Amino acid sequence: MPEILIADDDAAIRTVLSQALSREGYDVRVTSNAATLWRWTAAGEGDLVVTDVIMPDENIFDLLPRMKRVRPDLPIIVMSAQNTFMTAITATEKGAYDYLPKPFDLKELIGTVERALAQPIVSENQAETNQDTSMPLVGRSPAMQEIYRVIARMTQTDLTVMINGESGTGKELVAKALHQFGKRKSGPFVAINMAAIPRELIESELFGHEKGAFTGANSRSAGRFEQANGGTLFLDEIGDMPMEAQTRLLRVLQEGEYTTVGGRTPISTDVRIVAATHQDLSVLIDKGQFREDLYYRLNVVPWRLPPLRERGQDVPDLARHFLEQAEARGLPRKVFEKSALDRMKQYSWPGNVRELENLVQRLSALYPQERITDELVEGELAAARPAETVHASGMVSGEQLQASVSAFTAQLLEENLSDEPIENLYSTVLKEIEEPLINVALRATRGNQIQAAKVLGLNRNTLRKKIRELDLEILRGVG
Image (cartoon, rainbow, N blue to C red; front, side, top):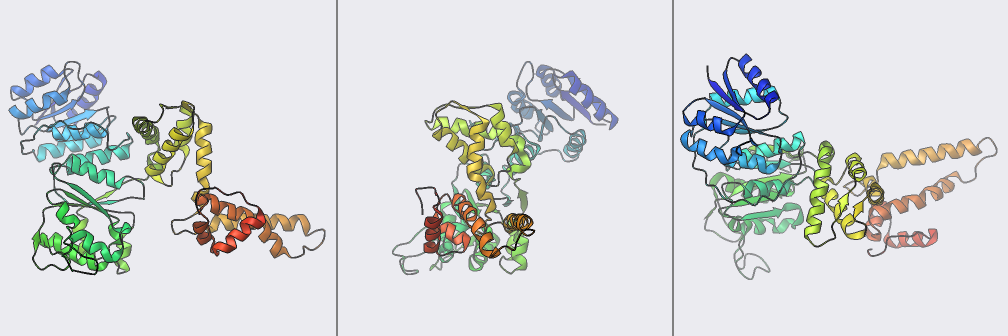
């Protein structure tokens, strides 16, 4: 049977791992220090290593390159309680077979051991570079640990990745991490958001155009594929790409070449594609709005980013991270009280990480006190809360409005029906709900009367007239 070497300075972990792997039929040897582990591996002992990172006498990340030089085919599984993005990346860069965060699942560890022994790694010369240790991604939740592990694996490949996640979950940050720590890090990272570009210009933006290709094309212009050559091209909101551009993109993925708009000579391209969307592409395919063959070309490695509400335990780490960034930009130093962080963990964060970042920036810039309390957090969240009643489509939530109107009408009838009939019930109810409804729309749009009128389905002048009639106080500065 294969022999497994276990190195961990925690006696309890050594015992648990030794017993579990022995029950699976493996021969197991354990040690509490890096020196013994090095002696065993240098002597050719052991078929697989399971080791902690922080050892009493040496950091395993310093030892790993030496172990890989003398035993290039030895699978090494790294465990660590320092569950950060950089831990996962460093483990991969140093030659580890896999990284497992502590606390770990025994079944998962045993499965990883089985896979490592069944498919021994082929050694590669991995250049050690001085990486920026700033954290592109933050969080210690199980969901984020899995993301770190997948990124660590994907950085060593050129596979096309499809990221699906709600707006504000950090899709571009993940794409940048794949590039920054991957094989193409010396090349450019180029991003393009399909939803932010007029549909008629997307092909020109992607593939470039020749002089005279269309009205206004006064000179040749390089497209994003040309700009990203040798690096990574991030196609954000791919679901908004027009069908004509989808056809051209499919050809690039199939043939590795494209032509500029107005051009005839094929241009070879060497880019890694990372795509992202907040939409369900299978629904768009059924509607005939997205090519199925392109979907399968892009969806080589499908990947879902969880919304912040599914990883609430990461909120304190993220909040402190954004606070440090604000201080680095010159804002006064501030700290969160525990009660403030607890309140933030309870919030649903419909805008995800982006909303949290914006909140922390406001708290850093608007308030003079050094300590951020739960009252300050609650005040800012309350100011933003009406926005939750507005859907992405720009319509007020029908369920909430209907419930409020129904409750008010029922109460009005109950209070007055026994005395005498209510005159003009329709106007009475309308008058009572009109003011709070307009207030909700104005607060949700931060006082932008044009946007509020659109949400309410009113003419802008009609809305202004009602604001004057009702003597409403609105947010100043926009609209």
